[in-house]
Length: 287
Image 1: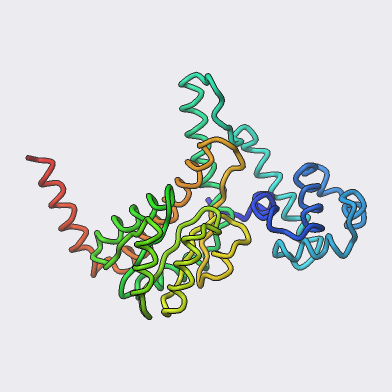
Image 2: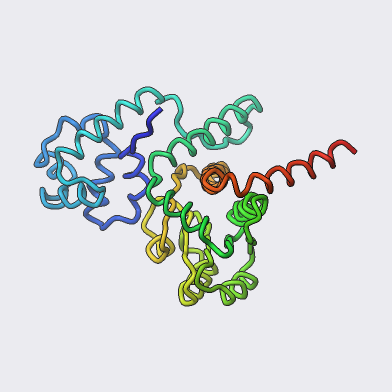
């Protein structure tokens, strides 16, 4: 199945980081998606209380050369969304029946992965795989739930004999970043992209010449702006803890993709490590 960019997801994810006028265009589009393909640029400008020039600027910000190509993309997104209209994000409600919770959490996680595949930049994935392959060592940085994603990355890449470590608290992150140098990869995991400890660590890693990779929400953030490579995830706009669950599952999927990309490209070199680690763990289960 080919995966296409879904422009409606991109607009939703980027909305809060747009200029005030572009945000007015975005909010009108998101509130009136069905009618957008039938509107001229002039109509959309009037309805969103902006101008033709603002609508055109918005289209360019979203990566389109003009209004026409933007509208074609909106139509395609509406077509794909019609098919899975039933698969909207659902928040946890007090007193939910367990069967409802099972269905909703599963659907939210599946949707987080699907939406992430529609915003992630495949060229950036390829660049990340290349620098991870060439790295002297990989250092993962993340706080809280993002720290769990870092630990998963450490566990995965250790299996193919990559020198790597996850640092999940502010003090150890600063210390580790101070010891980085050229040839090292500093891999930052942060949903918001503006966690203070992460940004302080990023600053040190950059000064020391490490290649920086950010795994973060599809948005404008300081982390995304200042990192060499940006891997974007899409996260649901829901209030309770299921939102954090969705972003975590999307991040873990990206870690899996990177690990598989590196292991596959270096398969002849790493298969002995994969085999050794598999055998030692299988041996433990037999006892």
